[in-house]
Image 1 (cartoon, helix red, strand yellow):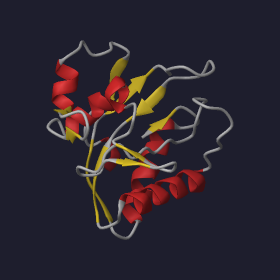
Image 2 (cartoon, one colour):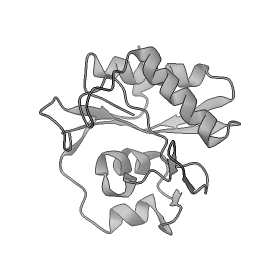
Image 3 (cartoon, one colour):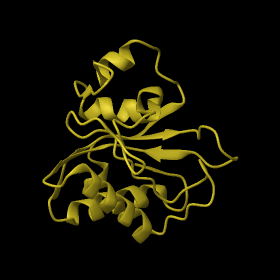
Image 4 (cartoon, helix red, strand yellow):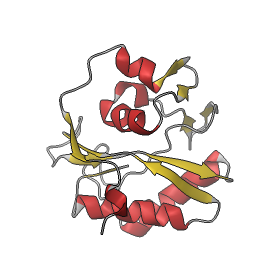
Length: 162
C-alpha cells in the first residue's frame, strides 16, 4: 500500500478497513509504516508505505479486482504513470503462484528491486518465498544494503489506533 496525497495515514487506515470488510478476505497482520521518497515520475511529496498479509478464499484475479475497486472507492485518479496517488494497492504475491497476464503479474515484477516494498514485507513475512527467484524476502534484502530513504514512520499496531 502506498499514498502520498491528502491525509496519508488516514488513507492507509481506510484501505485496511475496506479490505477487512470484504467477504472472503481477512487481514492477518500489517507492517509498520515507512516514509519514502518517490521513485521516478514527476516531482511529488513523499509516500507512506506499508504491507498487509491477507488470508483469502478468493483467487488472485478476484482479489486484485477487489483491490482496484477499493482504490476507485477511495477516489484514486490515474492521470500519469508513477504520479502522485491517494492510494495504491498492489498484490505482491499469492502463495507460490506465478501468473503473467495483461491484468496481473505475480509475483509483482518489480518488488525485488524496491526497498519500500521489501522492508515492510520483511517485517511481516521475512521468510516468504518469492516465486521464480528461489529466494525469500530475507535473502533478497540481506544481499544488498537497504536504502536509507526508507524511514520508519510508525511502528506495528498503527492501524488499530484511533
